[in-house]
Length: 161
DNA sequence: GCCAACGTTGGC
DNA sequence: GCCAACGTTGGC
Image 1 (cartoon, rainbow, N blue to C red):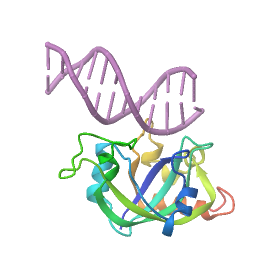
Image 2: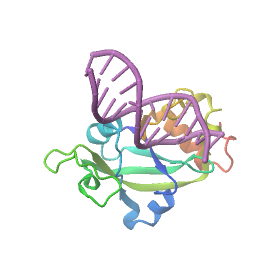
Image 3: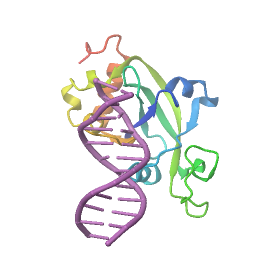
Image 4: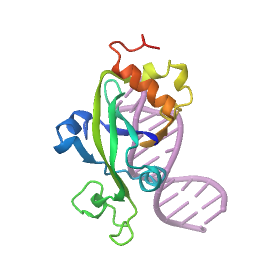
């Protein structure tokens, strides 16, 4: 069982959109970075836990959790000419891009803004907090995951640590 | 296979 | 909207 963090731009797809989706489940399409693709295709397994992060938000924050309900399969948006994620190089019989399906677990009572996470010693090494980090699908240690979930479910941001 | 130019991400 | 950091592309 592994833990991950998925970024999404607030205005494109939010955790509230996920909550409204049928069975609170969505395919995580549009990832167009090879390192992130490799995680989606090879490493992310059924039942893995996912932190959902809103980027380009006020403030940008980890806002909840989801669980992987389908492992990597071809990202069909790459084949769709009308999609903003269309990629002519990705072929049906040799897809370049992959996606997984995730189901909402919970929306945090207390979203965890980037700025606050930077102050938490247990998260010192977290990929999200590295300068210049842009990876939109990234591994998270179980300790980091648990730390953030505990804070997210607490009534106020910092008291429980 | 180097690297400059370009495009994108994402915090601020 | 700015721009730093990063990834990708393509000429050579």
